[in-house]
Length: 234
Image (tube, rainbow, N blue to C red; front, side, top):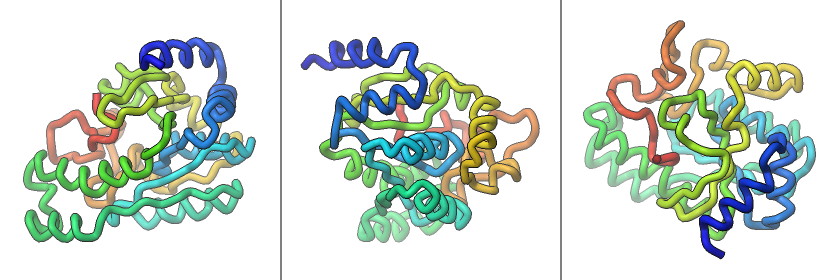
């Protein structure tokens, strides 16, 4: 089927549906071909809760870059246990990491945007491609409010680089709506969020933000960029 036709059909079928309803519909239509990538941030915790609460037949996976906060890994354990789900963890290739570190240093990503993107590519993009292999639908926790780049994205879109349909069920959720849902449903979340870490990635590349700062300002704070790692290029 033509990609544009498929996108239009999916967009029409989920139009007006809640996140829960949209996930359930696509899980039914794409059995074994739908997967959710969780970074264990607040948005992703909402989706994990929906999948677990309704026991939707959707695969879950996360990328462990080797530089995550201990608190992030703890959220993974608590979430799987609470919702009786199994999040598959993907790791970067050992040889590729050794070559990267020996070439640019253990923290070489601070020296240039190019080096930082090389690190993200090895630790995140390559494992992501393995995780998405053979899948038709990729679910993410992206929200339009997160950044100008993400504000231009749609609930249903085609990822040209990864050749897969992407579904962003929380795209039109506000930050306030997301927090309310988390607290109302007692969803486990990273305690770093309460300390100003709104967007959480690798420990060396994430800081807390100050009042009034952009939500993505704490990611790669030392550089002037679109604040993306390459997973969600636009």
